[in-house]
Amino acid sequence: MSRPILPLALTFERRRLVANGLLDTGATVNVLPFEVGIALGISWDEPRRRVILTGNLARYTAQVLPLMVEVGHFDPVALIFAWTEAENVPLILGQVNFFGEFDVCFFAARLLFEIQPKAT
Image (cartoon, rainbow, N blue to C red; front, side, top):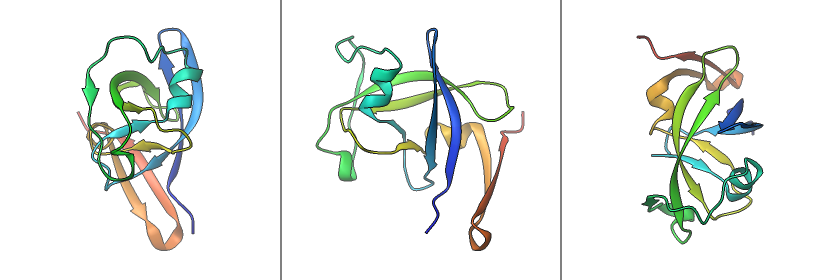
């Protein structure tokens, strides 16, 4: 079964990383796996606001982390992630705030989706 995976580029300060995000309309928040944050040069020990995750990630500590994100040829947008200590989890794009910044149309029978920045 195919999953809706979106290639994107994450930027923190001057570091840029290309990654794949799972479009998850059932996820409340965007989730950044621990190893992706480390690859961006982010220190877990910096004081940040904590966030409580639910479901499979409820047992892990998570921090609020803003990142700039580029999707395709669209202008970069600021997204807020719950950076979790969990490893080997997908980068999740959820309701807060990915689906607030982009309109996504799923064509499940054809295993396709289309994406556009929100209308201003």
